[in-house]
Image (cartoon, rainbow, N blue to C red; front, side, top):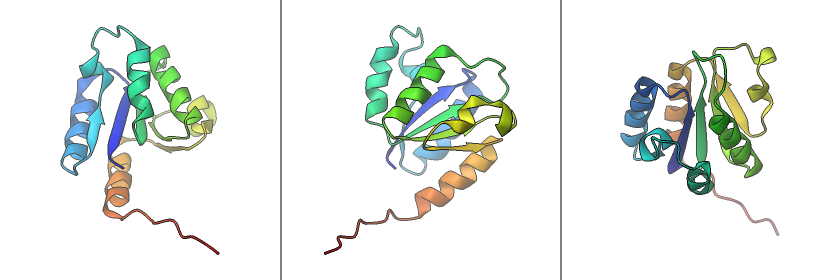
Length: 130
């Protein structure tokens, strides 16, 4: 994993915390809240999303999911990108937990533990059979 796309809650605390965590591990983080603060065009950062390996959607603490974030999660899922959702709503009540290619966590510390383990493990090489 080399490039991560952040979406969801617009509050800067979680974005800074997670960005620092990932950049210390030499992962490039794209945050549309910093790159396009005026939300000028979702199509600009959907193009960037195509080049990312992972989308992290942080919805903890908000009741309604922003439309741009919903579109980003759906698009990443259609592209078969890994989607990680952080949400404090029980999994039975949230549509996000049924998104293909996704994992869900109830808080940021669980996500960080997963990412630390995932980044420390070397990627598996495909084996050719025949």
